[in-house]
Image (cartoon, rainbow over all chains, first blue to last red; front, side, top):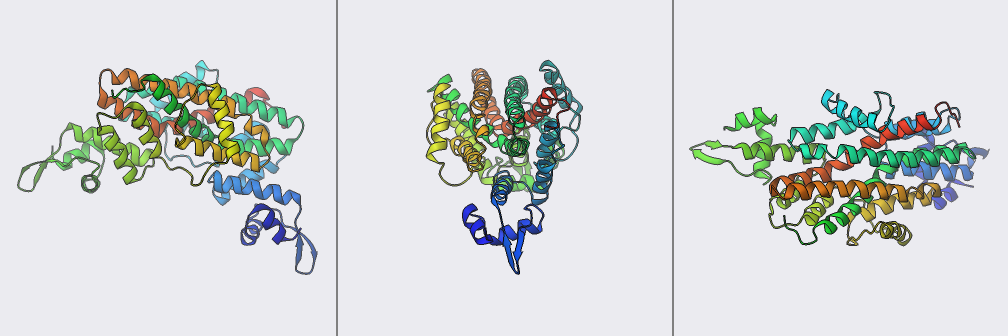
Length: 209
Length: 209
């Protein structure tokens, strides 16, 4: 199809399509004549993936490029593909405190977690625990255990789906891992807000305490 | 204490302290003489809370002002305080699709959730589901159930702590709900990354599928 048709089918402007090709996110179209290019259905799928990572996931162009390279690397194991998707999401700067890392390590041990110390989640979670402590809201640190158990259940469900899909279609698994990893935080955050309201109403419907 | 001492104790510059007073985030200090003001320990605690919401939570100044007003409103029930904290976090624009809202409604029913249709989590979660569908990655929609169950467990733990603290100290409960609601997404996101890596390694340590 022509670029105009690809644009129509995906809702992405022709200027953006050309930009993605220039930036190496979208494979170049096939040249079928002087000043004419042909895009295929693979471009439609890839374009949707690009927009999900950029617009919904909020990734930068270079982070999107790295995730797409991981998606395209057929030899990459699920764990490493997931790691690339994880690292594409901005992480706070700095080094986590020993106390926070130890607290996460203890709860991780209780759940049988084994991860590399460079996992970006350690710094993200540690930063929050550090703030709870700095605010002297140590009650919130008691949430580490139920939060970790919830994260464990969620991650197991994600990996189970990736493994099941990988058996039949590696490319599909890669798209699922990339999109699921990047957008999953948001799904979980949205559901948490609904569950919070529900639990708060249930606990003490008319309480002003 | 003087503003310089408050600045030293909290690591917040005197310019920022003055700005927060002007913006109504921090109560004005007591005037104890011509051109001299006295800050107390309440200012220290409030300043830490402000920085957590602004810097770590990433809230805007006006959103922070609204959350602090809710924290200060002694008559506000936990559910409404939580709702204010939730709405202080940016929400995507637009209206969620019927299909996505129905899917969330079904899983919510199965968990006994009761929420107002204006709960911001509905739009946040629906937007993600819409993207999964648009990308034709319907396998990811199957994650709605385990994600919702995890969100439910997390929210119940959060509310239980808020209720327990509220019995003894309403101000403390308010700070816990505000900070916990705003920073909880990040704690959960961090722990999810750790759990993902662990689950992926465990599932197929050397798999390239």
